[in-house]
Amino acid sequence: MTAPKRPGLAGALNRTRTALKDVAQGVVSLTHNGMALLGLLLAAGLVLLASQPELRDSAERRLFGWLVERQSQGSEIAADPSAVDRVTAANPHDLPKEQQQVADWLSRKYRVAKEPIGALVAEAYEVGERVRIDPTLILAVMAIESRFNPFAASPVGAQGLMQVMTKVHADKYEDFGGRLAAFDPVSNLRVGALVLQETIRRAGSVEGGLRLYVGAISSDGQDYIDKVLSEHTRLQRVAQGQRVAFNALQRRSTPGAPALPGTPELEAEASPTQVETTAKAS
Image (spheres, helix red, strand yellow):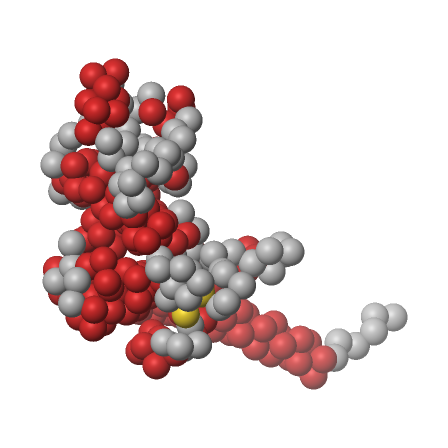
């Protein structure tokens, strides 16, 4: 005997299949429409970025920053792409010829990279024009005071490239963010140039200004003045394109005082005829 069919159950199954089929078609249709909408949004975004360079640059920076952040999460030392913005350096080949000559000579004498020296030379020329001081004099003070060490410090509190007394001239550093700016090469150069301008004005002469700048107490400061002005003379000649020995043209204010010894390595920077001429002039 054959079991009777259940029309109710068969109908329910058919309805279920139809519903599932409709759901599947709906999902496919929705996905298709969603992808089309996403494509339209991406196309509109690309058109907007292409027409707005500033917006594009901003988006690129944010994306790059996000990628760097993601990359640095797995590293012990975080990446910092903006570090190059804090560097005091310049391409020496971008400097005018006179500044190139000065930067090259100072780089070789004090064994400092040309890029940071180039930046300091360019800054000295710019600042020197504003304060009406020969830029080679600013560089000479810097050379004698710190040998171009931006972190130099003396026992009495002089700091940075030009060995400015930070406590005494704290007000001048306020425009640069505070006293710690003494260790920023450019800030120290600018403040040092202002101090040098003041001392020269007060004394009425370069020599007197240098005496006040060094703050000579136990002596008249003549040894310091001779060193700075000798370096100044050398740098002036270098700027003119002359070939000058590192220790040439050394001033001796005291009659009969022995010449400062120069090492063969330094004197070798000048030709034999120049060394002979310098010796006779001395």
